[in-house]
Length: 213
Image (cartoon, rainbow, N blue to C red):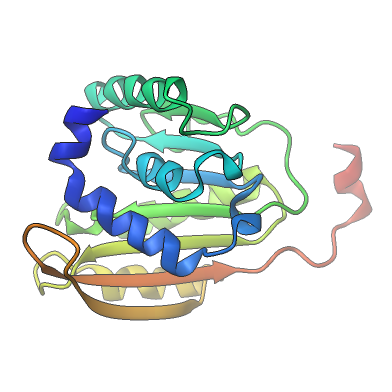
């Protein structure tokens, strides 16, 4: 754990802060599906394990194009579990893309959280394709509420794609609930962070045919 924590410490600490701020109740996390897109070496998983410890079990799907990050993340997850810092029922897996994930049977009520930490800092990112991936994954996971947690630098360059991302999400039925800029001082080098939270409610009325699939 610990090489990655040192090298990713800033991002992990920011996500610890974000999870504590936006999901203060463990009941919100228990049974949740976490999809960490651009996960690096288990970054959001390390943060969430730090926040909830053994108090809540969740499903974590890390997504990264770099096989080395997925391999390293898997090693870190095993170490966190061996140290007793993660619920034994928490499930962790890593994947090269969102589309290749088998989420299993569709779920009725549990929350899904998509984590996008610094992903939009890449100028080559296809925002439309990303939102389509998120929407499709949400449908495959189930009918419960879905939340998208976005974090990024507050500088103009890294956040340049955010307006297009926000519009695409809102068009897809994920209205923005919170947008904040904050001076993150809990780091060796304080920096300005841009946070946003988007949400899509649970499906209220399911056609009876869904129960027989």
